[in-house]
Image (tube, rainbow, N blue to C red):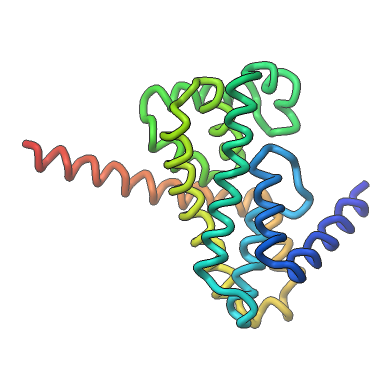
Length: 215
């Protein structure tokens, strides 16, 4: 079974390098709609960053395509969750890495912090899917959800594309170790938490600044 998934990931990697924008749009869109993909979205974006570094892709289109497909996929999951609600969590929670406890935590955070939960939560692996499902179940206004999801997706795409861009020529030499690094859930989680923390600090700093101006 492990060999099968490894072969699938290699095939998807080749597909990504061959078709680039179309491939990353398809892979990210499917993953964000809640369907598990053998090639993690974070790694796919890093690979596109590598393509930028060698002149086979352009940074702005990579970010735009990735953000658009992530937002589109998350929107599909939002509407499915809005109509079918808790049945998704009960039946497919394990597949989506979405436990009832995680779902309840996200819903509580929605009630307290609103937009910040969408932006920050979707930067953290393991919460990205939970946020879309929770937003649908809680019937968060779609315009609100899609706007802040797009902002979060743009931040996510920019960071991981930039990492791939910085890797550049090292990709050919250290491909296996880089793939292993970005396929490691703990590493990806650490990066996501760091991004989420930085964005959270920025959001609350802006809120404090606005509050100070009003007073």
